[in-house]
Structures are given as C-alpha cells and as structure tokens.
Image (tube, rainbow, N blue to C red; front, side):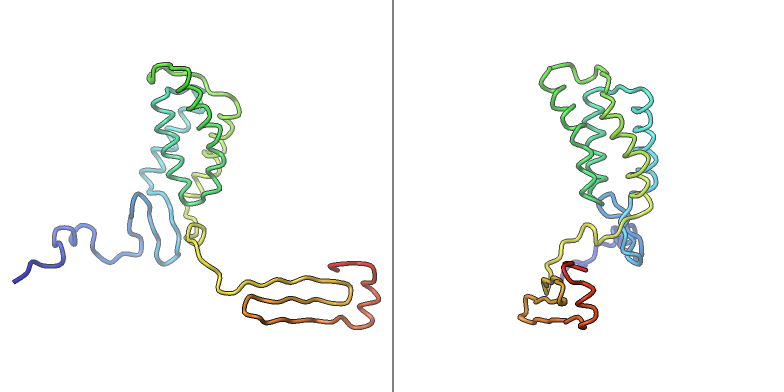
Length: 181
C-alpha cells in the first residue's frame, strides 16, 4: 500500500485547472501565452517607485530592495535590465563609501530619469502582459542566408538548399549600378 501521489491539500489550493496560474511571482496566461506581474505586486512596486521619484532620495537598504524588484520585473524582457545599470552603480558606490544602510541619500538625475522610464513605460507593459516568446530560448531548425545584387536575388540555407531569382532584362537595366534594389 502506498500514499496518494497527489497532495490533496495542495490540490485544493493550487492544483486546479486554470488558464492563468501564478508561478514564481508571475501570472502566466496559457491561452494568450503572456507573462505579467500580479496586480498587488504591480500596485505596491509602482507606489514605492513613485515615492522614490517624488522624494528624490532613498536609503541603501530600500535601493537594494527596489533594484531586486525591478530586476525581477525585467525577467519578462531582459533588455530592460540595461536601464538598471545606473541604479547598480549607485548601489555599488554607496557600498564603497560605507554609509549606514538606513540613511537616505539623494539620487542623481540620470538615475531618476531611469526610474521614471520604469514607472511610465516598463512596469505598465509588464502589468498588461508580455509574450512568453520573448523569454523562451529556441534553437532554429533552419538558418538561411540571402543577398541581392543588380542581376537578382539569391541565397542558401543550412540544409543545403539554394535559390536564385534573376531579374528580367528590363528590371536589370533599371537596377544597373544599384545594389540591393
């Protein structure tokens, strides 16, 4: 005799069928194939971000927390992490200077501009939902190379196929001395 392979307690809480489960702090919409922040998390993070932007100062401890939250949000679109560099540099500089972690210090205007960008653009887009295709890595099955010249188009692929499209004489004359036309 064996125990049930299902945990009935967990099954009642989180194991039911759903199009939008929350997994690791993200709402995954399996019908639309999108990833988004839960409403509570978005509201809380936006409120904290607005508070920092208005006061223009923050403590080391809170800056560390804000950076962690924005880094988590950037999971939906890793290119957004570029706009965390100034924040990371500020955190590193503050760490080197040795100030206490609870003293509030002013942020530079470029850092505040980055935070405004997060508040105005990035977080609202992540709240709405971003395509899961942006965070999934796939290996292409076929790679192709192509080019154009005045006499036509051509190319080949990784499977060994090649193609060529010659232009008509009339079109070729019109494209004379013009590449990629």
